[in-house]
Length: 532
Image (cartoon, rainbow, N blue to C red; front, side, top):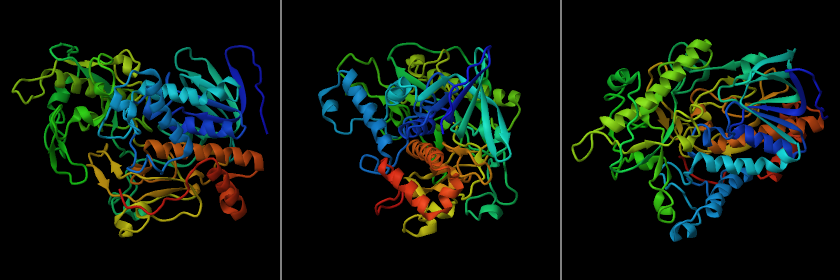
């Protein structure tokens, strides 16, 4: 069931493929790889210049579980991780110890067993997609945003995307549409039923849901990350940001001090916690460090490089989802101002152990993130629109508290696995962290199936989860698995002429599809392990 490109004269083009994937983050890339491996033609669109989402354009080193080196991710995600290590081994002069390290960690950051530069991840993703891009199976359209969709009853006929600079539009006609955008942009466009923000206890029965009415605009903070290195005795102080006076004095009601300070919070206890830049304990420099210069031959790097994605630059003063374009732009700019203000504070006013103020040697590394302003190409979005799904994963399915040490709720229709703490950052409603222990969980097929729309699938963090469970389903390996499962599901449905709903609700078809996933290296169940 293939489509061929339809030639069109003039600025507007039509493109016909089997599967259209809108959004080129980790979920989108994994979906495109899966669909192409299954023999389908694919268009993959991406809003920025870089595919890879969290790992590249958002500059967020991978958040993973403790068992990641042995199990707990898909085969292709492991290829991605191994590819990053191989990239450094192939192209960089490594120090002897780093060269011999089996699980080489370029940055030795404390957040992850694989802290790496955004450009390394980009290079590896491009290499993984290359055979399919070169053969014409995958067509990659960069700097494209979806602007409208054509629907017919419960089906989507086409999605039109616009080039962010030229304004040229292309209409993509496909059998299946996968929404891998960071905010679930196709859901309102296609009329697919969805949820935003915080559900209430009355709706979900979740212990940590909000009391009273649901709060659809109460979403987690997003963050504009940036990269820094440090040139001792240098002065790389940026111009004072225009909103610096506001941010330098800003003290949220629920926070233990000013946001721009060394005092933050311990997310799971909400107790005050003191950070330092280069201190031995609670070092923010080491936290998301992506280059540890000691890993490389002397002289390769002038300094370590770290990513600033800290409590101090989480932005929760407003949502960018389901608001006017004007309000969205305002909050995006405010978040950039917060990040630049944090940098300026670090360079000029941050108290130092030696009694001085500021680290003027901190240098904004624009090249690391590929932008003129030195901030990541795209904000790190923690919470998306979420489909109203055939099955929604609740806190009581996966939290350690709900299962007294036992495994998480088993799902007969598992299409993958993940594990991360239920980790919610402060929210637009001025609500504090929610950080609770979570059991290794499965991804149920029912959470990938909209209640009505037949040929649209989530391929990112827009699946059937709640405000609470989004906190553990939004991380790198889980997003990859969601996208990969969606790519295979669309392919399976095209080949068998079945709908996703039919695949889930027919035991023979479900077993057949799960066999396809297992064969492709997707783990459907966990071995016996404890909570995280």
